[in-house]
Image (cartoon, rainbow, N blue to C red; front, side, top):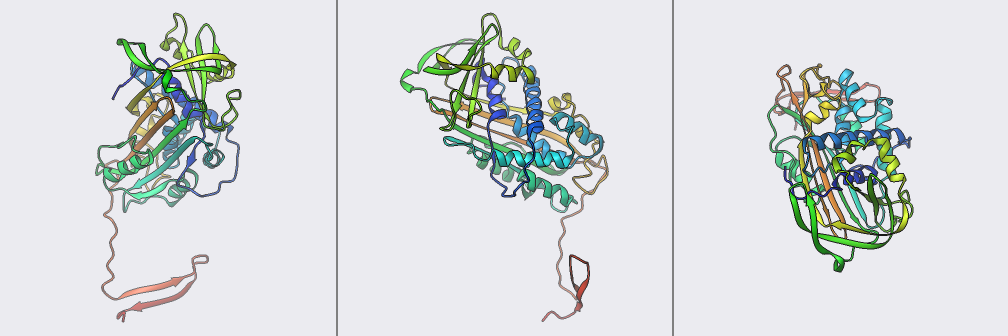
Length: 412
């Protein structure tokens, strides 16, 4: 884990990933619109829980994650799960009240609704399936992920191709996500997200000054940006908060007016970041952001860059997704196999963010490794050389009717 900066407000950057719009660049499939309210609520609850659990293990360090990256990657794996494995995953993702079709349709609608991030904002989300050649994956699993998650489908060979795909789709901010492809890996599911937003009102670089910042390791000097004017903000006995919108379409006075925003929360008085996070819940989050209002003020914000990496197995297991990591996992909707043949071996997540006077650039990637247990052998890749007499048939696919049949002994 690389730790570059410890600002007290860093946790709120998580929420940017929960509230901004996104576009899936790898699908042109039209999705029948359905309500996304339950899905968004579920993803937000998942994201806050994920963030808080990661924060416990990394207390005093920077924590920066993209919940939507993790959720979408898990959503692809969920499409291959069945039985109690699927039930655990659905519960964790907040999708327990939906059937698989409803969950997928809501994801597709969400992508379609949020495909236009607005002027001054770039936001792209891409998904991919890397599948072992010759393994009996179910066509329905692949098709659902192509249609609803816009997933590209590629041959699983080495880590070089996967890392290159991630690097390209994060504009080089995340050059790699996995170290190797193991012989037992039968599928690697990957999500990549890239965000770049220009502040609706930029910070003037001439106002940036070196000032003290009091980190857990002691006082240090950081470049502090400064902006004065109309702000959407709030101050109470627990925190000071400000909303900083991105893009030309965002409106300072209307948090729901389009574009996307960064919310910054700073504990007040004797309160600490840890104490503030103890009070953070999905319900309190809604209350906090709805309490912000327009008023004149000044915001001073450090210019910084931070990176984060985590293997999420323990965190996700603690959130209720236990069976997927067990050798008894049921992924029979992913392949022609039996329960216990395939399981999730690793969930890796990387995220990086850079904030300056112009705006914010951030990226994240999530990779799920799915492995084969010793219970199910993998056949060699299919290879056919038609170099001797052979049989042919031409069949109507709709009815199964044989239209032509022949034996070719001399293909002149």
